[in-house]
Length: 368
Image (cartoon, rainbow, N blue to C red):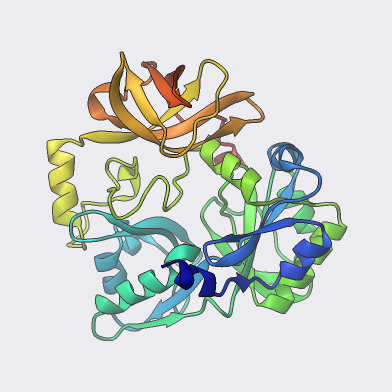
């Protein structure tokens, strides 16, 4: 087991040398060397995104292209959201489930003129590709393009103004849409998506294109941001992280993802199980909480109410803006109501906390 880990090859994104040149601390993450933070520090990266603009390398994500006469029918079967509602230019947040309702992965689908472009989590690329092929139907092609694409995200209140200087199109795009356009002379795909709760865009292209665009944006003053700040930003929005907040042992109903689960469409993998869960009620619910005293919650910490264990933390951190510990936890459904007082076991001490209605920070991504 240990020998297998030692022999595992850690990949480098096209931007690896650019991160190294900027002095980033690079760590193995989901099979890739990724920047966790840069010399300026996590807080400065965090506030750059919340107040101005920052840029992330997310080239470790996986990309598939799905086409053929039955592509829409296939995606209706294999994902939980309604692909039939999409038109060319749309993006859609969705997930794939196992027959028991457990989550295979969460993902984004883009409706292209000639098919569908699916973006999946880095740790799940091979698993997702196998799952798609295991369930494939006639007249559908699935191609793994993960080695072909690089991906960067520019996020923050000034992201549109900055990126507009280097593109040929108006970036006044609706949230969860995309345009095929030219950035710095390169034909790329720009989507109005992100993982921060701020105005932002994600840019898909090949390695050479994205390296040039990255260098151009960095030279124009956009601050590079690593995994640590990205994790805080997504947690403040209650955006789920696969492997922490969702996995094969959790389902979309208890994870708060009912809004992407469309029971009105036809049959899809996991539908019967999810309907039963919805009708019977969940035993637990993914819940947002804020510490009321000093303390930082971490994954695996136990949650109590009146000395009774009622759940466990899936993600936790210190919010630089709120100056408080925040977290997500699966909590028994009897106790997950907003306003309830709970306690987190931190190094043997029960530290007071309070359940809140997410997000922790106002989500501004919809209002630009």
